[in-house]
Image (cartoon, rainbow, N blue to C red):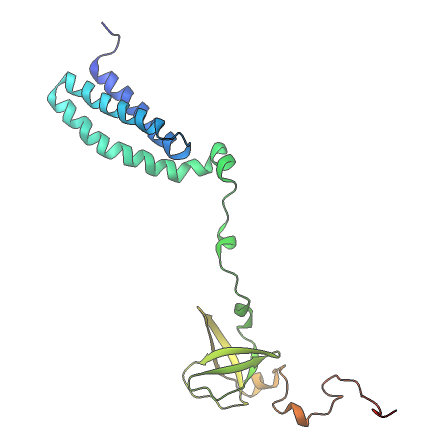
Length: 193
């Protein structure tokens, strides 16, 4: 005669089966641990039926709840354990998961419309040509604009007021009529000398 009654064996086999299911998820065993967990869980149900019919049906229900719960808890808490960190490495924090888009730095910057924007067109900001969309109204070519937001792959601009237009650090609209000294170019000197 064994020291444990069928209910104790059923509980013990259920715990071992759930533990083996969790181990099968994280330790590659070629299905051996999964097979052993299945054997333990089925053995648990058989031992519960040896006690009585109600306990056996109860263990079937417990199995349908306990195995998915064990798997869910394992996926949630195992990466936080020292063993999980050794297997998976450190988890990235929320700041590392954000996509880096250099266009997000353009918000608040002042530039010049390089084409008529009905509603989309090109904008020059610090000498960089950017495709943009106006916030609602049409924007004329050469008009000062302010970047309002970057939404997905769209840069949204609005017309700049007078004080914002003075902050524009953009190139003049007519580069060919600007003196070379104003553009930062050195004099070419006498080309025939």
